[in-house]
Image 1 (cartoon, helix red, strand yellow):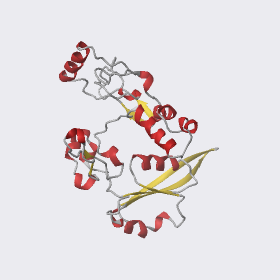
Image 2 (spheres, rainbow, N blue to C red):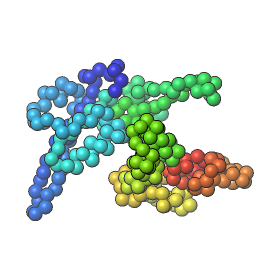
Image 3 (tube, helix red, strand yellow):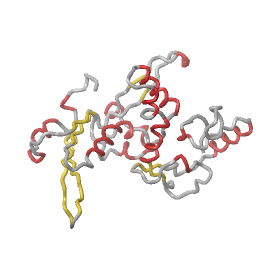
Image 4 (spheres, helix red, strand yellow):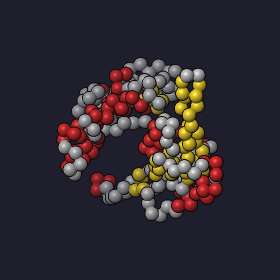
Length: 263
């Protein structure tokens, strides 16, 4: 956490877990409360005095998901701390089309890359959300898994550092090791309006029973999209799923090969 962030600006999410008995079964429920300051948190006697079992720093994509998973255990208490403000009721965060109007001075860490040699030594904005939900609150709800090569490179770096052997890493931190979990968390569904998406994705690269809803855009390919795809096919550089050219048509960008034009 950057040292320039003052503690009073942290917001805290307290998860107090309860157990409710119904008939002969137990339903585990979690109650959550949002605090906008340390003072509000400290002065609330209703949260009880029992210590927290887990304190998670960072309420972004990773921290929020981990807090949610931990809260499934009714015997533990979880505290989630986020440096940015709440995302509740902020229209520009809620509506994907308004993401260009998000106030970066409030909801973004405003990082920049180092000078890029291939871009005339320009620096590029590297947007990271400083808000509950992290970058998932400021990215226009765009979903992508990224590149298979990146995952494997991170695993190689872990092996090089001596953290794991190559065989150990292959089962822990690589595209193939993480692939089942990528599908498990996803719930693929039709886009808003139920337009036809036949031929615009590959079903075998998606999950259907997870917690995160994912779909194609409601509008479908634009006239410009269709022209670009036709041009790529005419030039003989069509990219089949799992191909190697890195240009042309890519039916499924979430298969680990994200390069190319998508329908």
